[in-house]
Image 1 (cartoon, rainbow, N blue to C red):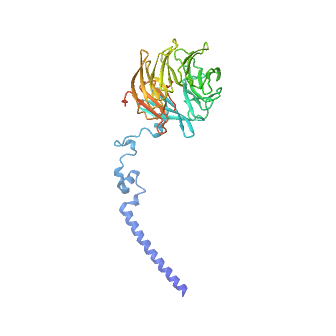
Image 2: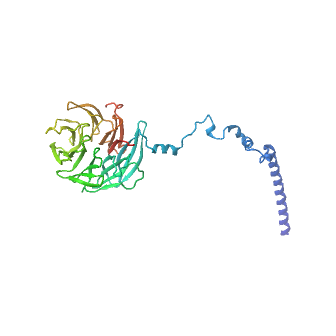
Image 3: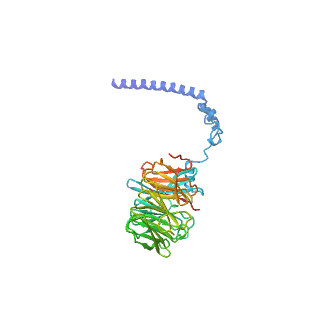
Length: 397
């Protein structure tokens, strides 16, 4: 009995499935007849596009490039990035030493009238104190864009700015015993680099041999600022924290000394195109004018309320001072007198450590400070109303 009942149930189920299949087949036949799917495989590609869902009427062009109503995408993101990566004759390089928490780096920015962006950066092993562009190679390379970096260690490292993802410097100069505070490259004798240090010495380096060829050590305190004269390759200015300014004739190895009592020398710089006149700034906010042919200073001015950390010239008589008070001031040297032209207070980079004028556009100024959110600012002084470590330099081709 049980067997017979199971067989009867199986027969009923099979009959039911046959009926469902027949119904589905009838529905499929209706769909095939309605949309002409019997002929689908025989249709051309164009006919298929016009049949399915009616979307064929909306597709007028095989690609977007052929559609006159769409703007052509002639340049991919990769091509745009590649274009930015290539350096052009109207580009300036802006070098910035940056410290974020425990990480230090050298940023190589590209600046032109239309854009400003980071081209690449280099990891540095220690906190950078000074950066000096160098256009020299002992290998007689042309179009050389090197820079020397002094940091909190006694070692000076020289990097090639044209090389990306560089892990090690090209050259290491070893001779100091403490942190390197300033560097100056001799644009006339291009194999010579000078360095100043906390160890109270100044070294002259020969980049042909990467050796120190002379050490100046008669200083009572750390040496903070040095600069070669661009007109006379033998003259080197040196400023130390004892308030002493030394004018060294590197050829004759003779020294003239000047003093600003009870001050630390923050910055020394030659007036452009001058063999004899130079400026010195102090931690007391003063700026002093000297003539090497005269024993005493020519004049001075109380320029800022805090240390005058940097000086830069945009022309032979027009110069800018930057201060830890956060201000930039523009000055004119008129008959050896300081004339204040304007003051800019809204730079917003905190205490200003460095300032530099663009060599192609003297009123475009780069400013670096200690503001962690915004430590670098580029200011167009022609557009601004009154109210750490950066250098602009010409890209060499």
